Image (cartoon, rainbow over all chains, first blue to last red; front, top):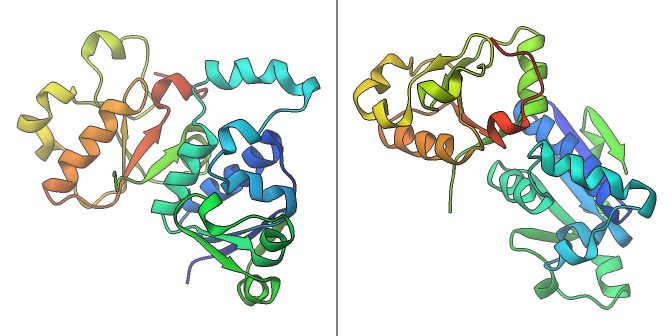
Length: 131
Length: 102
């Protein structure tokens, strides 16, 4: 039976997005079952406008150039690949509501559920990480 | 919409380092691969893939590689149409490869 990786994305920012997607993609590369729970600012990562919403912290701006130089895929490309590989993208229903957001604000393929639902997955997970 | 599985350079590098058996096919032109290929890779230029794809073992887990990840994705789609499964496209291609080259 394949390993299960549970990821909680609770921060916004491009750094968090890369941290989350790196673990998710490593899971995909090693045939693990992966689910990501996006809550609070983490919702930026799966927002339709993520390209505008996700920024590096000012002190990390110099890294942006290196990402380009090494041809690191964009967050949007990695999310697409993750989705196609079966990674579950779960938006926290409560924070979606509280922040006045709607399902249409997010990319396709996102599930909307609460923490109880995510815990059902996480209880069985071999690894749980929070960013 | 592509249904090709993608793998990041960093994950491929680590899988190779830990000894995973992967068949690596580099579809760049001979002039391009002169600058170095992933150790153990076999060069079959995309232009020759139609004639030579049978050199690729369909029973092995296979990673398709090119310079940026675009040509290798097309190679994956071609191979899938020939019935290959267990395939990966190296996302970002050799431009993103920071491991050793031969």
